[in-house]
Length: 300
Ligand code: UTP
Image 1 (cartoon, rainbow, N blue to C red):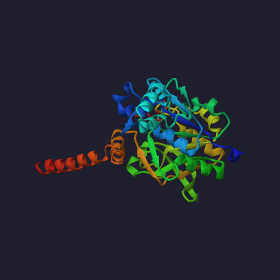
Image 2 (image 1 turned 90 degrees about the vertical axis):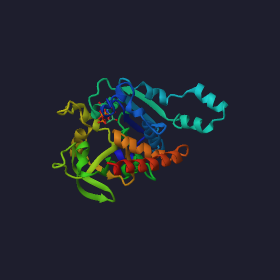
Image 3 (image 1 turned 60 degrees about the vertical axis):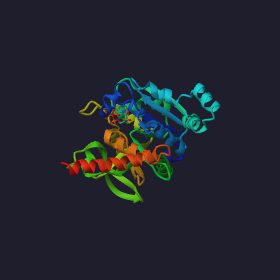
Image 4 (image 1 turned 180 degrees about the vertical axis):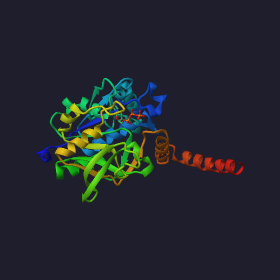
């Protein structure tokens, strides 16, 4: 029974083309875009660590080498910082050195479902989590741990969902919930990838954390490309839901979407206003900017 199996592995798919950030992503991975001074993918690996995940496989593709370098240890730099007693900086670059991080290549960006399938032999016959780099999550208990706790009770695949504004719904995979079986845990009739607002069965969107049973791989093996030429994980999950239960867990914490220009910039401002080195300067800048903009507006 799945319930008795422990979740110890995570897949982080990072082989997408990142077209929403072109031209930056022509040569640099979007997963390395900083939130103030920290690459977004670092937040994901830290969430995995805090959740008790031991082994991570990052699915990469062309132009993603810097992700490997980022998670490699850098003895020269570490020795240099230590010699100069720059202990905080040293800590910032060694936080996840104790994680087992592996890399695999997805030869063609054939979609999220295909990226997950690439890691099949690494996962084997165990339940696992998929963590997408676009979403930085904040809560007392990390979202991935919330899914793992839920799995200990149900033994079933569980996806994280969150309410999003109705006019945004077509950007997401969406659930058609039946009943709420316990606080924030839903039974699901259907999982639909990017529905139009008129067809969306709810405003509960799949956000970037999934806990899946290994049976998903047999389904992904045969999942056909959709109209856009991609193998969709959501389609495979919908099929899995026909043979075993797949729950949706509503995330009540904060979600920072770093996957598009505007929300990435907003996230940087929020994190900048918390950053001891720059918070005061940034606050003053925003205040002055507000006044300047007001002046400009009144002069129109
Ligand atoms: P997105 O739909 O956000 O695509 O993929 P993207 O390529 O990253 O960005 P845009 O939309 O072109 O700007 C969701 C996640 O799945 C991964 C991406 O790296 C991202 O983490 N992915 C997507 C793959 O690993 N391989 C793929 O073929 C597609």
